[in-house]
Length: 253
Image (cartoon, rainbow, N blue to C red; front, side):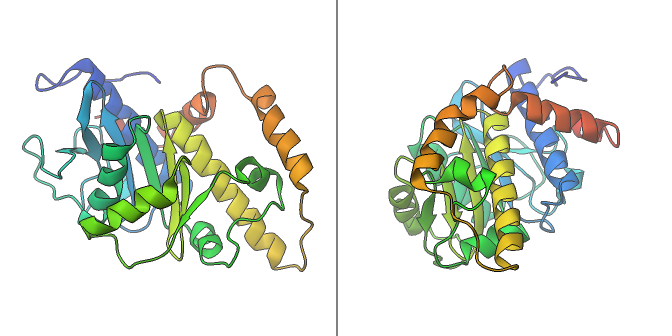
Protein backbone atom coordinates (compact mmCIF):
# COMPACT_ATOMS: atom_id res chain seq x y z
CA UNK A 1 0.00 0.00 0.00
CA UNK A 2 1.42 3.37 -0.97
CA UNK A 3 2.09 5.94 1.70
CA UNK A 4 0.78 9.35 0.62
CA UNK A 5 2.13 11.54 3.39
CA UNK A 6 5.26 11.68 5.51
CA UNK A 7 5.04 10.80 9.18
CA UNK A 8 4.45 13.69 11.57
CA UNK A 9 7.48 14.69 13.62
CA UNK A 10 5.83 13.19 16.71
CA UNK A 11 6.03 9.60 15.41
CA UNK A 12 8.28 7.30 13.41
CA UNK A 13 7.62 6.05 9.90
CA UNK A 14 6.56 2.58 11.08
CA UNK A 15 3.77 3.94 13.28
CA UNK A 16 2.56 6.29 10.54
CA UNK A 17 2.44 3.43 8.04
CA UNK A 18 0.45 1.35 10.55
CA UNK A 19 -1.92 4.27 11.09
CA UNK A 20 -2.50 4.62 7.37
CA UNK A 21 -3.12 0.90 6.96
CA UNK A 22 -5.60 0.86 9.84
CA UNK A 23 -7.38 4.01 8.65
CA UNK A 24 -7.70 2.41 5.22
CA UNK A 25 -9.27 -0.66 6.84
CA UNK A 26 -11.95 1.46 8.50
CA UNK A 27 -12.81 3.04 5.14
CA UNK A 28 -12.88 -0.39 3.47
CA UNK A 29 -15.23 -1.70 6.15
CA UNK A 30 -17.50 1.28 5.62
CA UNK A 31 -17.45 0.73 1.86
CA UNK A 32 -18.49 -2.88 2.42
CA UNK A 33 -21.39 -1.84 4.64
CA UNK A 34 -19.86 -3.07 7.88
CA UNK A 35 -20.10 0.21 9.82
CA UNK A 36 -22.33 0.19 12.90
CA UNK A 37 -23.03 3.85 13.70
CA UNK A 38 -20.02 4.94 15.83
CA UNK A 39 -19.47 1.48 17.32
CA UNK A 40 -17.34 -1.61 16.61
CA UNK A 41 -13.57 -1.67 16.34
CA UNK A 42 -10.47 -2.64 14.44
CA UNK A 43 -7.26 -2.50 16.43
CA UNK A 44 -3.65 -2.82 15.32
CA UNK A 45 -0.48 -3.13 17.38
CA UNK A 46 2.03 -0.33 16.99
CA UNK A 47 5.16 -1.79 15.34
CA UNK A 48 7.96 -2.22 17.84
CA UNK A 49 5.68 -1.46 20.81
CA UNK A 50 4.16 -4.70 22.08
CA UNK A 51 2.05 -2.96 24.71
CA UNK A 52 0.56 -0.23 22.52
CA UNK A 53 -2.12 -0.40 19.90
CA UNK A 54 -4.25 1.88 17.73
CA UNK A 55 -8.04 2.10 17.93
CA UNK A 56 -10.76 4.27 16.38
CA UNK A 57 -11.80 7.50 18.11
CA UNK A 58 -15.10 6.96 19.96
CA UNK A 59 -17.70 9.21 18.41
CA UNK A 60 -16.51 9.11 14.81
CA UNK A 61 -18.11 7.07 12.04
CA UNK A 62 -15.84 4.60 10.22
CA UNK A 63 -16.02 6.93 7.20
CA UNK A 64 -14.43 9.72 9.27
CA UNK A 65 -11.40 7.79 10.53
CA UNK A 66 -8.02 9.09 9.37
CA UNK A 67 -4.45 8.06 10.09
CA UNK A 68 -3.99 11.15 12.24
CA UNK A 69 -7.11 10.78 14.42
CA UNK A 70 -6.63 7.16 15.43
CA UNK A 71 -6.03 6.90 19.18
CA UNK A 72 -2.90 5.25 20.52
CA UNK A 73 -3.43 3.49 23.85
CA UNK A 74 -1.47 1.15 26.05
CA UNK A 75 -2.57 -2.29 27.14
CA UNK A 76 -4.23 -0.80 30.25
CA UNK A 77 -6.32 1.67 28.26
CA UNK A 78 -4.28 4.80 28.91
CA UNK A 79 -4.02 7.21 25.99
CA UNK A 80 -0.50 7.67 24.69
CA UNK A 81 -0.48 11.15 23.27
CA UNK A 82 -2.78 14.13 23.30
CA UNK A 83 -5.74 12.83 21.31
CA UNK A 84 -8.94 14.78 22.05
CA UNK A 85 -11.07 11.68 21.44
CA UNK A 86 -12.23 9.15 24.03
CA UNK A 87 -11.97 5.37 23.60
CA UNK A 88 -15.01 3.13 23.84
CA UNK A 89 -14.52 0.91 26.88
CA UNK A 90 -16.52 -1.87 25.24
CA UNK A 91 -13.90 -1.96 22.52
CA UNK A 92 -10.87 -1.57 24.74
CA UNK A 93 -11.73 -4.35 27.21
CA UNK A 94 -12.27 -7.00 24.55
CA UNK A 95 -9.36 -6.08 22.30
CA UNK A 96 -6.86 -5.38 25.08
CA UNK A 97 -7.26 -8.81 26.66
CA UNK A 98 -6.42 -10.48 23.36
CA UNK A 99 -3.52 -8.14 22.55
CA UNK A 100 -2.16 -8.73 26.05
CA UNK A 101 -2.38 -12.53 25.97
CA UNK A 102 -1.81 -13.44 22.32
CA UNK A 103 1.62 -12.33 21.05
CA UNK A 104 0.89 -13.62 17.53
CA UNK A 105 -2.22 -11.44 17.18
CA UNK A 106 -1.38 -8.03 15.73
CA UNK A 107 -4.79 -7.06 14.36
CA UNK A 108 -8.29 -7.67 15.71
CA UNK A 109 -11.54 -6.89 13.89
CA UNK A 110 -14.95 -6.92 15.57
CA UNK A 111 -18.25 -6.18 13.84
CA UNK A 112 -22.00 -6.36 14.36
CA UNK A 113 -22.97 -7.17 10.78
CA UNK A 114 -26.50 -8.50 10.28
CA UNK A 115 -25.28 -11.83 8.93
CA UNK A 116 -22.56 -12.22 11.56
CA UNK A 117 -24.93 -11.48 14.43
CA UNK A 118 -27.60 -13.74 12.95
CA UNK A 119 -25.33 -16.77 12.64
CA UNK A 120 -23.80 -16.13 16.07
CA UNK A 121 -27.35 -16.19 17.45
CA UNK A 122 -28.21 -19.51 15.79
CA UNK A 123 -27.98 -22.82 17.63
CA UNK A 124 -25.07 -24.65 16.03
CA UNK A 125 -23.51 -21.44 14.75
CA UNK A 126 -21.70 -21.63 11.44
CA UNK A 127 -22.48 -24.79 9.47
CA UNK A 128 -20.36 -26.43 6.72
CA UNK A 129 -22.91 -25.74 3.99
CA UNK A 130 -21.02 -23.43 1.63
CA UNK A 131 -17.57 -22.83 0.18
CA UNK A 132 -16.54 -20.14 2.66
CA UNK A 133 -17.97 -21.93 5.68
CA UNK A 134 -15.79 -24.92 4.83
CA UNK A 135 -12.75 -22.65 5.25
CA UNK A 136 -13.59 -22.35 8.95
CA UNK A 137 -14.95 -25.76 9.94
CA UNK A 138 -13.28 -26.70 13.22
CA UNK A 139 -11.46 -23.37 13.39
CA UNK A 140 -14.01 -21.10 15.09
CA UNK A 141 -14.33 -20.60 18.84
CA UNK A 142 -17.54 -19.51 20.57
CA UNK A 143 -18.10 -17.35 23.64
CA UNK A 144 -21.49 -17.05 25.33
CA UNK A 145 -23.07 -13.62 25.58
CA UNK A 146 -22.53 -11.98 28.99
CA UNK A 147 -23.76 -8.49 28.15
CA UNK A 148 -21.80 -5.54 26.83
CA UNK A 149 -18.06 -6.22 27.18
CA UNK A 150 -17.07 -3.56 29.69
CA UNK A 151 -16.02 -5.78 32.63
CA UNK A 152 -12.39 -6.82 32.92
CA UNK A 153 -13.27 -10.10 34.59
CA UNK A 154 -14.88 -11.42 31.39
CA UNK A 155 -11.46 -11.34 29.74
CA UNK A 156 -10.27 -14.58 31.33
CA UNK A 157 -13.26 -16.44 29.89
CA UNK A 158 -12.81 -14.84 26.47
CA UNK A 159 -9.21 -16.05 26.29
CA UNK A 160 -10.11 -19.50 27.64
CA UNK A 161 -12.94 -19.98 25.15
CA UNK A 162 -10.76 -18.80 22.26
CA UNK A 163 -8.08 -21.37 23.07
CA UNK A 164 -5.70 -21.92 20.16
CA UNK A 165 -8.15 -20.60 17.57
CA UNK A 166 -7.98 -17.13 16.04
CA UNK A 167 -11.57 -16.73 14.85
CA UNK A 168 -14.37 -16.15 17.32
CA UNK A 169 -18.13 -15.88 17.15
CA UNK A 170 -19.46 -14.04 20.17
CA UNK A 171 -22.84 -15.69 20.64
CA UNK A 172 -25.78 -13.32 20.09
CA UNK A 173 -23.20 -10.63 19.39
CA UNK A 174 -20.99 -10.85 16.31
CA UNK A 175 -17.69 -11.63 14.61
CA UNK A 176 -14.13 -11.33 15.94
CA UNK A 177 -11.35 -11.98 13.42
CA UNK A 178 -7.67 -11.99 14.39
CA UNK A 179 -4.53 -11.98 12.29
CA UNK A 180 -0.78 -11.80 12.35
CA UNK A 181 -1.22 -8.90 9.94
CA UNK A 182 -4.09 -6.58 9.14
CA UNK A 183 -4.61 -8.02 5.62
CA UNK A 184 -4.77 -11.53 7.11
CA UNK A 185 -7.42 -10.48 9.62
CA UNK A 186 -9.29 -8.71 6.80
CA UNK A 187 -9.51 -11.72 4.48
CA UNK A 188 -10.57 -13.93 7.40
CA UNK A 189 -13.30 -11.47 8.37
CA UNK A 190 -14.41 -11.06 4.76
CA UNK A 191 -14.60 -14.83 4.23
CA UNK A 192 -16.49 -15.43 7.48
CA UNK A 193 -18.89 -12.62 6.68
CA UNK A 194 -19.56 -14.17 3.25
CA UNK A 195 -20.06 -17.59 4.87
CA UNK A 196 -22.62 -16.07 7.24
CA UNK A 197 -24.43 -14.20 4.45
CA UNK A 198 -24.71 -17.34 2.34
CA UNK A 199 -25.85 -19.44 5.31
CA UNK A 200 -28.54 -16.86 6.06
CA UNK A 201 -29.77 -17.06 2.46
CA UNK A 202 -29.56 -20.87 2.29
CA UNK A 203 -31.47 -21.52 5.52
CA UNK A 204 -34.24 -19.20 4.34
CA UNK A 205 -34.90 -21.58 1.43
CA UNK A 206 -35.08 -24.92 3.21
CA UNK A 207 -32.86 -27.79 4.31
CA UNK A 208 -29.21 -27.18 3.33
CA UNK A 209 -26.75 -29.67 1.87
CA UNK A 210 -23.98 -30.34 4.40
CA UNK A 211 -20.42 -30.89 3.22
CA UNK A 212 -18.83 -34.03 4.67
CA UNK A 213 -15.85 -33.80 7.04
CA UNK A 214 -13.74 -35.66 4.47
CA UNK A 215 -14.39 -33.06 1.78
CA UNK A 216 -13.89 -30.20 4.27
CA UNK A 217 -10.45 -31.64 5.11
CA UNK A 218 -9.47 -31.74 1.42
CA UNK A 219 -10.81 -28.20 0.90
CA UNK A 220 -8.79 -26.80 3.79
CA UNK A 221 -5.69 -28.72 2.71
CA UNK A 222 -5.81 -27.27 -0.80
CA UNK A 223 -6.88 -23.68 -0.07
CA UNK A 224 -3.31 -22.37 -0.19
CA UNK A 225 -3.15 -23.25 -3.88
CA UNK A 226 -5.81 -20.62 -4.63
CA UNK A 227 -3.97 -17.77 -2.87
CA UNK A 228 -2.07 -14.92 -4.52
CA UNK A 229 1.59 -14.55 -3.41
CA UNK A 230 2.34 -11.84 -0.87
CA UNK A 231 0.80 -13.24 2.28
CA UNK A 232 -2.79 -14.00 3.33
CA UNK A 233 -5.14 -11.20 2.30
CA UNK A 234 -2.43 -8.85 1.00
CA UNK A 235 -3.68 -8.67 -2.59
CA UNK A 236 -7.33 -8.65 -1.51
CA UNK A 237 -6.84 -5.76 0.90
CA UNK A 238 -4.74 -3.79 -1.58
CA UNK A 239 -7.51 -4.12 -4.17
CA UNK A 240 -10.07 -2.75 -1.71
CA UNK A 241 -7.81 0.17 -0.79
CA UNK A 242 -7.55 1.09 -4.48
CA UNK A 243 -11.33 0.98 -4.65
CA UNK A 244 -11.90 3.32 -1.69
CA UNK A 245 -9.15 5.64 -2.96
CA UNK A 246 -11.27 6.31 -6.05
CA UNK A 247 -13.92 7.77 -3.75
CA UNK A 248 -11.98 9.50 -0.96
CA UNK A 249 -8.30 9.62 -0.01
CA UNK A 250 -8.72 11.62 3.20
CA UNK A 251 -8.00 8.51 5.30
CA UNK A 252 -4.32 8.98 4.39
CA UNK A 253 -4.12 12.30 6.31
